[in-house]
Length: 128
Image (cartoon, helix red, strand yellow):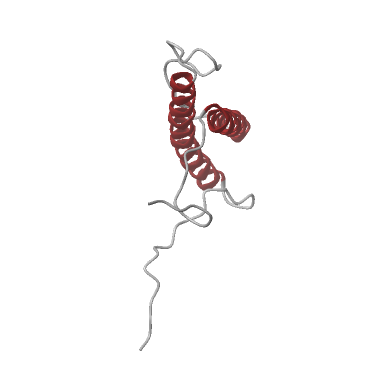
């Protein structure tokens, strides 16, 4: 019996430097689309964690973090942008994603410290 992988082969998002300019630009545009989705997802994650933190601290609004009320607008470079512009957009999106990831981690750590742990079933606990 021979098993086959169910995974579909996906072309890499990182452009190959030796490729022709059209292929390289297409790969950069796909990478920008993926990063736009990642930034929006991380924004929602950070927003949820900060809102939960505000609720745990009995605050009225989640104004305890620099996260905006709306997700960041997606970057849409011009269709005829050159590689240096596209690389700049990729770098900007990458730094935005990293900042949002760290913000979500900070809010989760603060939330864990703000909420008292509940007793859990397991070793060392006897109920009944």
